[in-house]
Amino acid sequence: MTAERNCLDCGTLLHGRADKKFCNDLCRNNYNNQLNSSSYNLVRNINNILKRNRRILEELNPTGKTKTTRKKLVAKGFDFEYHTHSYQTQNGKTYYFCYEYGYLHIDGEEFLLVKRDAE
Image (cartoon, rainbow, N blue to C red; front, side):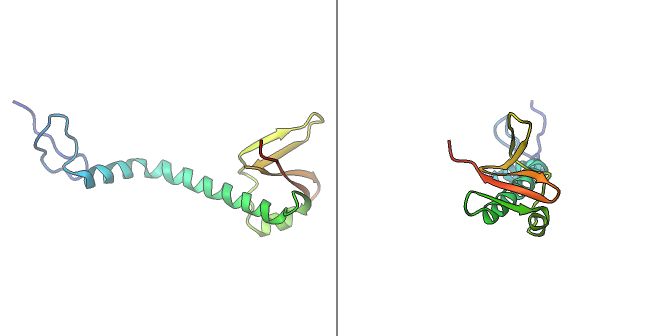
């Protein structure tokens, strides 16, 4: 005799296979979507910030290398907290990148924008 099993999502009594966890695909999808929603939202929000940062750097740097100010970057919504990677030169300067577009803090309010060639 087997114990009664209920759907993990809606609680309906399950019939059939002993390892069945959900009464149908809708309940299975709903359960898994809710289980993953908080971590998915975090990743989605960070990806959106990174894509926005990249778009801003691309927009302000049409030639591949130019200078701009912190004020211009911030006015467009740039978030300095998020970048995909960094690169430190031999002389100790650190470039921060959002995918292939990067920036280097020169001094004061000035930044050098660069585009890294595809490798």
